[in-house]
View 1 (cartoon, rainbow, N blue to C red):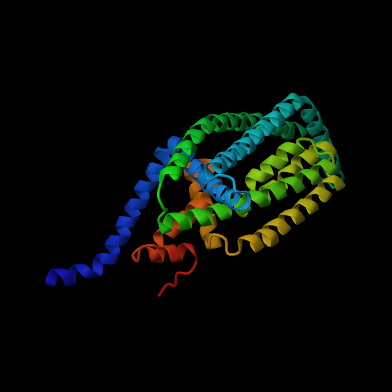
View 2: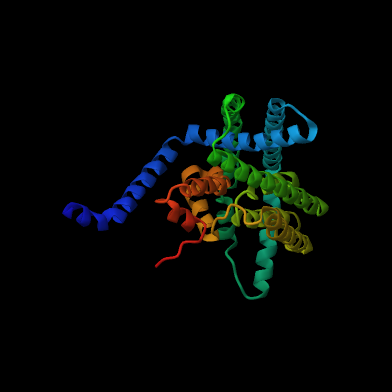
Length: 339
């Protein structure tokens, strides 16, 4: 009896320590198994969305469920492949015209130094030229190119995982309530995200094409991808075309018009349409979203940032099922009250 009373006050501390150890071990596993686990997670999300679309096709058009799964997956495969080919083609054209961009950049620097001298600000032309020459533009492009090759390579692995998951869907019985709830919420979130990202990319292309922006197609595709990163992604996709426009036209009305229109597009889509369609979304606190975005980006890179919200939402739903871990789920939802 004495032992029970003595150990009881330390039970919460033991629980916290065990959870910290478990989280540390889980993070190590995520990093160590990144090569295989990340394609599996992507395949899992694709199968969730494909399952929801297959159900819709079955109810709306009487399409057999198995055929609906195949059609949905082929549509995803086509979108990913076309996006990768689109970006790689744009990068090749950018590299081919590197000399032209270099000349434009030198002209822009001359213009900038000429105007700064009018206001009594003297800049070292040689220092500026050397600094610009050292910018790792081509290293970044090579990195993007290798990433695209990696994505195309992973497509085979993702396809294999999706096939096995579909086979499991076809042979499995009724889903447990937790699995069904996760699939319903995550697939709904991803479908809305895909739709609003397509809207943002389409309007971005219209704006950039209207001012004859080079690389408009690549920037539109990047807008679609970056829109999956909450808060930060739309901001980056708004700023991303500005250097290209600056190299083309200098600092004039083209940049101001594109900046105003792109800001308005992302504001309307992100703060009005997406909020209206998603409602409370994944019920995650905004600060938690930023923290999880940083964590998943450190663990899995850019793909981790893209998948941060749905993966954190799944963790939250699992934690809600247990009384011991429910306070953590409330913390993720911003509902935890410290006493």
